[in-house]
Image (cartoon, rainbow, N blue to C red):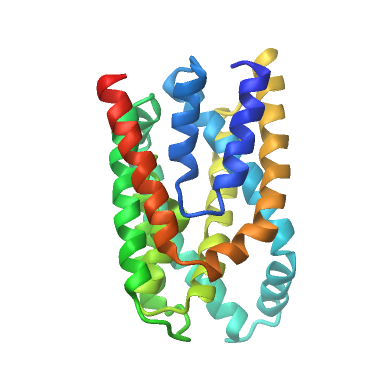
Length: 264
């Protein structure tokens, strides 16, 4: 992978991670447009590296929330922080199971299957539209809804299904407040990504050589910086703007991707 391509893809990841438009889907579209010739394993590895970068940017932006959660946990009481942490753990179960048992199957979808990305973007558009029709509430994420949101996150492993779009939509459709849905959506993915990277490190699957290390490092830095910038102002946009706008965007990009894969 070329250095400039890695930087461009890193910026795409950082900017799209916090909007309900599927960062993984945009990465696959970006790879296809740039002509990045990576085998499925390397392509998936690069995606994981970029997601790791945006996970770190999430920790930086939400550092107060994370600090309060850990502070509450060390009180060893059944308090709000302990309950929130348990809900995060529950939400991780579906995606963790998919990652453990269906990893080889998932890799196939990271091999330039643009028509699949397009179809999934159309599905994302439909989910966002449905969520926008939901009534505004002040309801918190419950233990039951945390598992349902986790199911949405597991499905969003497919490129083109927006993780934040799917999880926020699931939460909103379950009656959870939009602001609380967004906060839970962005925080729930952090331990999952860190766990994935730790697993790959211990398994020896993450190993860089020569130009690959430089390119992936550049992509990591680009995604981290872009993620910091995006997370500070785009999260507010997600919470306050109508999800229909993002639904329209995903629908247009999805249809273009489908048309391009068929006739391009």
